[in-house]
Image (cartoon, rainbow over all chains, first blue to last red; front, side):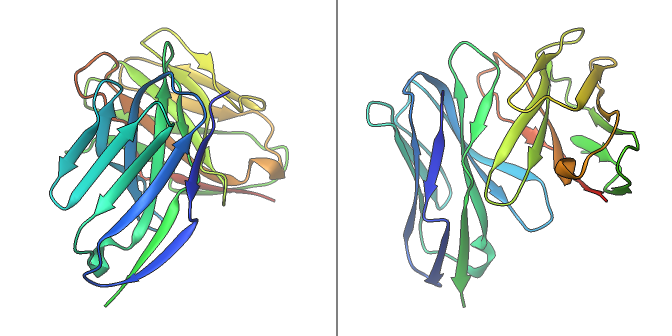
Length: 112
Length: 114
């Protein structure tokens, strides 16, 4: 059974700092991996999607990497801003099915 | 751009009452999903519909039923609500098989069962 873990559960950093959020998964047979952002009381917004054949994806100040063999993904946020404060969730879609399994998320607070 | 629209946004039920959560997407996606989100547990899949006319159970289907009314609409029904079903419910859609099959989410329904 696929399980997705995100550590730490919460993170507080000063504005301008570069930071890394971690995601691990137990089964390397994944179809893709997504990183989402969730603001309080809102739905989820997909930030980056990495196909199983890819190693990384970039969008602006965000870079996500994928290492299937070790069951790990990281989300790198450069030059963090207070507007980056949100919960970031990692999710993997399992191979051969339609199910996407989510981690519990990392709550990020960027202090001005 | 509406994307995925869920109604209602908030609902309070008494134990044993029934209700239907509505979801519609305007992106012509073939797959739709219902998730619930509980504190510290991430999102868990309740039911999904891979394509119009099909539905399948997810991780936590007990106490729920779904209907894929057409390609746009996917509803979730609670026949006899229980306090354990207090949660935030999200509908999502995606285009399975597309080069970029991101999940698109609605804004959620906050449900309290007393």
